Length: 358
Image (cartoon, rainbow, N blue to C red):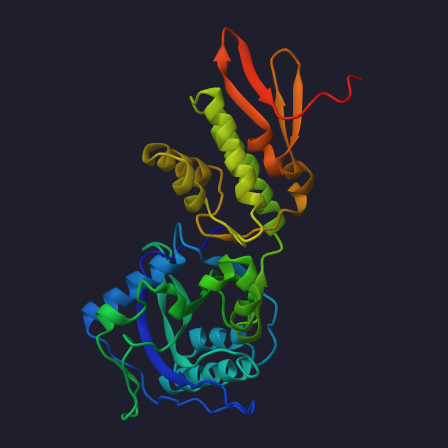
């Protein structure tokens, strides 16, 4: 079930500075703030809206699971922040996250930046849930920080924080879905975790993202990714099948679906991406609504075609006359040419000569 990230209300914000690694591999201690940061209402609204946009519907955020729930893990620290009633305790706990990130970056070619810890409420008005958000924002020319004060202050937040240049930030959100349970009763299964990092979307850079979601946050991909990838394939085929498309268009859409899942460079699956690339705006909306109606997630999932490998190797065309054509998916468009449909006939050209008539 997808967590509801609408209507975010940030109640506390604290910023810590995490530095680049030393060339000798030693950790530079982070600069720790000892007070919460206050932001004008307009800037706060911008921050909330941009976070929701980054992790909400049709985003490339991925729902993950806790794999490290030991003492000192990010999960345990975030849980303690949620249940802490004392502001000084929340500040102390947030500092632990800054030190934990600094340790996670050791030995890696990762830049420093600002660690922003936020907490508050999220979800619909009749089902409000406590959350803790962790944002690592890398410094660049448009990200100005004043370190001469005890509180790290972000200037020009409205226009600069979480810029559209998404490679400059990473986000992890821990949401307590069991809002009526006490600290002793709640466990990691009661938490939804959403993680956004643009590096997770591409296969070749996926390992570069692991230090953030694995070493730092103590999370990993869902064990349901195989099933969800399979569901995406079959649900999308169901949608294509029930549409009033010409048969040749249905074949083209199914070819695109096959190619989308076989793309070895793409590490995630997202309904909005496939819809935007293949359907007109009206059909795209119908497709999104259809996928929601069958409870498929709006956010990205980690692509795992384990259950589909044999199916995706070949395209299979079946005709009303019981004739079947099986062709390799890798070059289907080059060897199978469908010229049209006339009077209950399909006109097809096949590259190659007949070598067996058994």
